[in-house]
Image 1 (cartoon, rainbow, N blue to C red):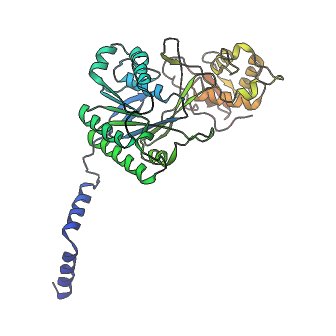
Image 2 (image 1 turned 30 degrees about the vertical axis):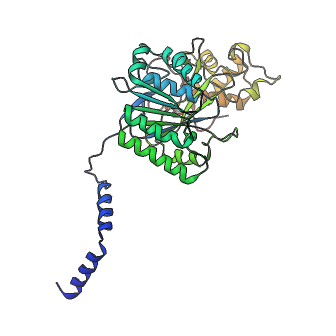
Amino acid sequence: MDTLELVKNELAQALVTPSTQDDLYEMEQCRITPSSKVKPHRFLFSIQNTPCFPRGELVAVTGKAKSGKTFFSSCFITLCGRDEPLLEMTRMEKEHLNVLWIDTEQSECSTHQILTNRIMLMMEDASQFVDNHINIFNLRKERWDRRLALAECAIQQFGPDLVIIDGIRDMVNNINDEPAAQQLMEQLMKIASDLNVCIVCMLHQNKAADDKNMRGWLGSELTNKAFEVYACEKNPDHTFTIRQQLTRMYDIPHPINFQVDANGIPVPAEAYAPVAEQYVNTIKWPIKPEFLLPDTKQLNVRAVFQAVIKPDEMVTALELRERVRRVANVQSNTFYTDSLNNAVSQRIVICGKNTEGKNVYMLAPAQKPMPQMPALFSDEPPEHSPF
């Protein structure tokens, strides 16, 4: 080795300080290669046979005030101890799951009522499960700067599989404090990863009716860091709709529509036509009353299309439009197109193309797996209406 090479080696050694060596070692522990032994995702639940809510990750649930966020989380708490499906949702692991629910928004009375009058009503063996698998804490009376520390202590103490923080906004002083939002998300991600737990963070959407983003800088950070984001919405006919807004892996194909029966149990709801109000109120084209949802002026999408399409029948787009016009008196092309797309997204009807390349439709089977459709069919909504 010549003198120049010796000098270069000595300089390189001189630049590697103990601090640099520690950093290099830490970086090496974070290296990912094709041969790295990485644990695969383990999902707690499935919706419409699609895995969701993975261990070691954050999941966000959002919506306007009183839009069903807490009811949605109650369903997942219930599924941790319920063996039967609930609203197209099932638990993926055979054993019952441990739950930690941190409530920062509601009063102690409200938290207690949700437990006794909602969650326990939806379970088969409620008392035993609640005693052995659920830990619920109401932290509304605690200071904002104590809530995260108390929640982390509870997670470490009880070792839950699922953590629900109902009111993540109440763990920071200012929802628009960028450093505080980033620090909170980093702490929660570390807890989820270290303890192999799924942490569900609930946060309101912005107040503007057409703004579906989560509130503040905290909402932006949560959107970026969450594995999945679910949006809850309360409809004018008092039904609820849950949509998977974002995901890093598996797309849930269709929204969940449900309503609450007289016993406080969620049951599937008829498909909701969100733009019906602006058309149904017209005097010129009154839709027939038998095709409206009870006590509303909203179109009963399922009833309409089941009335005009026979089982196993394929109907062209133009023929289907004419039948709906004649049977239900839906005369507005725009409203019909919105209702048809809604029916396809709810899997009330299946859309495809015939040998001539034209749109055709048939009823989806009720409460049984999808039939083997010809290759020319797709269960995706049409890109645009033929009208």
